[in-house]
Image (cartoon, rainbow over all chains, first blue to last red):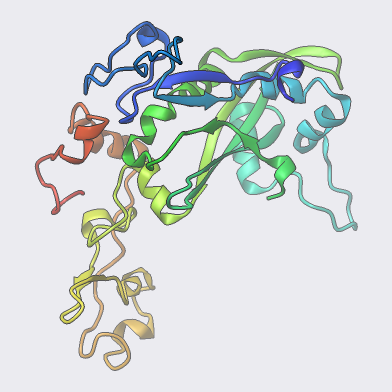
Length: 137
Length: 171
């Protein structure tokens, strides 16, 4: 569904023992540099193409962030912290809390928050990275 | 945190957990984040109808305790489980269970004249807590400590790699 929108994902082959990624400078290798495990499954009579043992799916974040600024509705939300001003006497969510203040000082412009999630089937561990994005013209 | 505010960034295949080797998998993400911070990305903002240079920084990670061990590299098991106190913690082994226990280690974080510090009845019987909280390392100090260990091996050998001071000053 995301591919026609230009927000596809990269498939990066990796060593099944988590030694290395076949990525950038190592993209052409066929054996793991650390453990020597083969990158591809052996060809059989039925499967004649090369199939990697393990593939990492990576969704690049730069095009996604750029895409958030392309829609008028979301672009307004992305610059909320910069454009939002509290009115005296009205109880509203503060646009400039302490944390945001420090970072907007460093980044010089408005902010937005995005997150990163990884779920692990065996231990049900959840991991979430929050990324604060600033703008500087 | 509602689903529309989440970005799926990566799908790491199984069947086993990557454990400490998650650093290998996170490399494309880290590369892109360093690019966003140092070389930046030109972006078009439709609400202002102009281009601007976008920069991004990683603020924090939110994870449960086992995943914390995977991301930080500091094992969250056993006597040295606490990633803040590190080797300065006051964990002890239970006599009958044989497990590490962190009960009442929080007393050292109290103010120096707190009445719980002098309470010898309800915590450790007969022990007055006199220690202050362990020092909090800054980013540069932590980098100095980590850079002494040299190259880190990933993959099958990662569990067998031992550095001097294992189990005493780090895990």
